[in-house]
Amino acid sequence: MFFNTKSLDEALDIVRGKFHPLEEAELVPTGEARGRVLAAPIHSPLDLPGFPRATMDGYAVRARDTFGASEGDPRKLRLAGEVRTGQPPDIYPSLAPGEARAIPTGGALPPGADAVVPVEDTELLDPETVLVFSPVAPGTNVMAPDEDLQAGQKLFEKGHRLRPQDLGALLGVGITQVSVMRRVRVGIISTGEELVPPEEEPGPGRIRDINSYTLKAQLEEAGAVPKLYGIVPDEADALLAKTRAALMESDVVLLSGGSSVGTRDLTMAVLAELGEVLVHGLRIKPGKPTILGSSDGKAIVGLPGNPVSAMVACEALVIPLLQRLLGERERPRRPIVLAEMAKHVPSAKGRLDFVRVKLVSGDRCLLAEPILAQSGAISSLAEADGLVIIPAESEGLEQGERVTVELW
Ligand code: AMP
Ligand code: MG
Image (tube, rainbow, N blue to C red; front, side, top):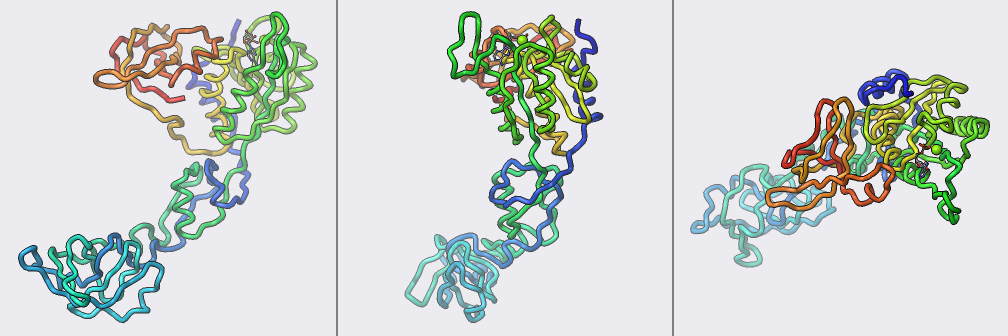
């Protein structure tokens, strides 16, 4: 019998109550910090771009010199040289009234100028005269010195996971090192006497170990550092010894298989020996035989052996646990798309259902075709484009119902 079954929300509350951010930071080069979680908030040390900068190719002008310009009545300005990108603005004389200076996108606006007329609104009458066919207001086609970022402005909160664009903002203001949370170390143990390493030929009745590798890849995707501890047969002493060894080197230990209630399901026995059981049985499908326990403040998670169940339970429970340990701000983890269910899918009340779906294009929008297969069939997840989550209170999804699909 499962005791203590919990809804996913209840289990996540237990995670937040029992486990706390590791609070161990390290400095890393910003250029290599994608996917890392900030250990402290970051403010911009300076204004960006730091000087008024042209945003179009054209002519730097005094805006008032262009007022009233039109196709039929262009303003005539004296061409006073050319600005090049990368040159300081003060190597040129100040722009005098009635003058224009050629400027490329990104060039520093010369003193005296306050706008840029795009080249397509001008014509070079002769090498010294520019005709301007439409007026510009002050500031037009110019990025102000602090328009991108202001000195002192908050860039990111503590707990923010850095994305490629974030590295750009940090490096743009010269922050070349960032303090990030150290990565969470996760040990993975596969249990089951039927398992052989994937490179071996399984004998009759035996199968290759899938979970070590799917879990490892999921953890890598989440920014953790997984370590494989191999396959342990269903023997209590061996499993206990291996779990102890993994705990020494890890923040979290995952045991795949043996989390259910059979005579050979030993994860509960290991937890009884090493610490306390917090959850035995999650009201999710697939993934019900999931165990959460703790040993000296470290989390031990017993995941179901079924490869699909193990992946779903890892996504639902282990990834949020890792986010908790990193102090990461909560955010949607996977991209979602809107779709319409192609078929009715029934669901029992009282549990969260994760339905594997394939996306195909429909007349009005994407259609989500459910893949109804045994949770042991890894092909069903390999074939799926994503998952639709049916809430606990729902008795199923109707054909044509609008759903959100988490892309996997
Ligand atoms: P268990 O949770 O140990 O009862 O295992 C449930 C099912 O998943 C059984 O059919 C196991 O053979 C299978 N299984 C367990 N561990 C793995 C694994 N690492 N890779 C692939 N299948 C597994
Ligand atoms: Mg087993």
